[in-house]
Amino acid sequence: MFARTKRLTLRPGWPEDAPVLAQAIAHEDVAFKLSRLPWPYTEAHALEWLSTPKSESDVTLLIFAHEQPTPRLVGGIGLHETAPGGGIEIGYWLTPSAWGRGYATEAGHAVLGMAQHALGLRRLVGRHFLDNPASGKVLRKLGFRPNGVARMPCLARNGEFDCATLELDFDADESRMPIAA
Image (tube, rainbow, N blue to C red):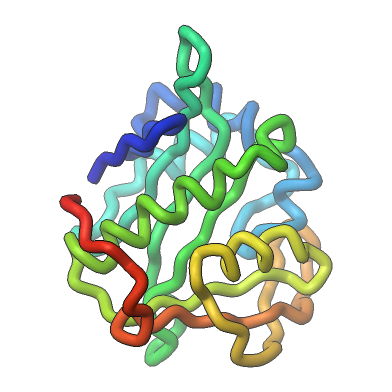
């Protein structure tokens, strides 16, 4: 899947993206906010992840800002299955130089359109570590509603930490306009 918004292009990652991916994501401030990212993160990690075959239902996209003449990698976003019975979860990250520009919300709206209209999903879940309130703000802007607190592992921090859990029920949100995906 691909998407283009006013300022962003979302596309699958390719092995040749490994150097720029490693450069964009290999920040302690990013790794400590994600559940499954090893730390320190290297180009070899990026190449391994980009080379791993993805299933048909796996949506993993790199986020490129195209406001400048040359697009630059600013983050990643995707949908993946959580633990059995846990549903489909949205996840995202941005490189620190892209924080505070609304990119996560813009990319999130594009992926929600894919989830609802291209994949036919009715419900999504989201989580964020309690020490990452900015991610919670993005999820709430996207229409997610808080529904509790749970523990979630953080590979980079080598432990489990409290996280807020949220959910989005597409059927309950009448304000969403259908889009072509």
